[in-house]
Length: 356
Image (cartoon, rainbow, N blue to C red; front, top):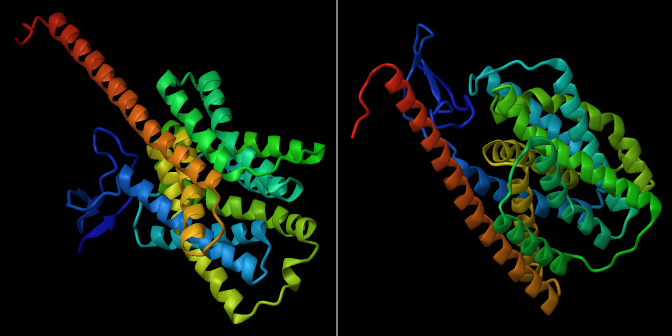
């Protein structure tokens, strides 16, 4: 009998995240299986996110289920249950994590969701879109300041083009108020830190995206269970517990939770394989796709400004992908050169003649 572990370790040059196969004696054994690489993770993230936006839009706008934070709590709870079943089936390698950083990480992610929903509730749609746009420059600043990450001028310029395009396409009005501005600032900071930590925790603790999501999902769900119902009541004026759950509403909630498993999994996977900035760029691509879906399928009115903004944003995304790939290749080449130099020094110290 052969047991498979589909998601084992984080991707690296040593292929450590290739699937582990165990024989009857419990020893690992190599077996050919398909790995979900970076392109697959990005594609899964786009597909699942656009799908859940369409599903939730129908659930909220048509069926009147406006309890977004409590719905996200259900998403994470179902994701945790699914991953518990996946662990029982030996579908990924279980790893432990220190309790304190795990709790901080989980609560921070839950707080980020709460602050984003509050920002939307206390601000105009245009100011909320500006809040989302502010996440990328804030993330860049935090990574430069605290993580010594470098961004080339070309990458910064392409991000500027992207943000300008998304801003033109989505931002319509800017109504400012003190409470809404403070909530937006909290939303930007908590979201940036949570997404940066999603990447750094995977590297620092040598844990891949699946076990990290498995460990944190229950605590994230618990955080949202505490803040979700009162927050939704504050924003909607009604209780989630008093809502009339018809079969149609229940079916779409279940569908939303099922799609959320893919959304949560792909989010951790993308940030782990790439970084928080790339994930935010991908998020804006999803926004453009949702806008396009509304224009083409739902026949929503489209202005020349919307179309112009989408085109500018797409140009920025293509430029970012090109420049980021170019920088990554240069960094990889430099690292390989350093490794070669170290090997040459070791050979000289050992008295081995360098190869020609």
